[in-house]
Length: 132
Image (tube, rainbow, N blue to C red; front, side):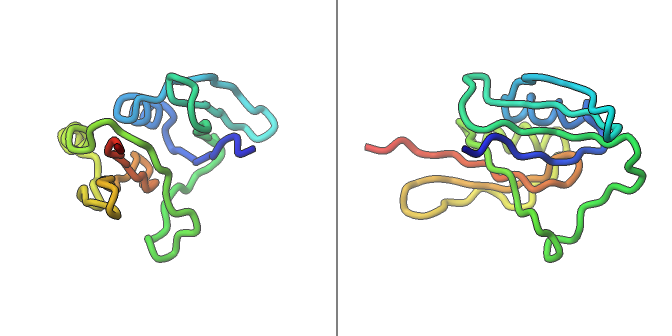
């Protein structure tokens, strides 16, 4: 069973704010990892659905940068949103980087867009249209 995905962050508070405010996640737990001089935070959908997102902050990490898109190994995180246009508008107001404006994906009416979190991790927003 897939349990969680972890991404590094240069600023835990800023990342927690982004994922809770814009994507509706809730903090499940927060703990110190003395062996690696790190702090981790687990977030999840408030209904407990889906896997958890782990934010990891390594205190000894001095250099923090995302590679150019063509050099990335990790592609993106994906989140469903109720209203993609409203989410994008709120993000734009807060100067979040929108890398791909909303567009229809396939024939189901699903609309997707891509943004960057505060550390440049690519995040896909997905608005699924009701079927039937």
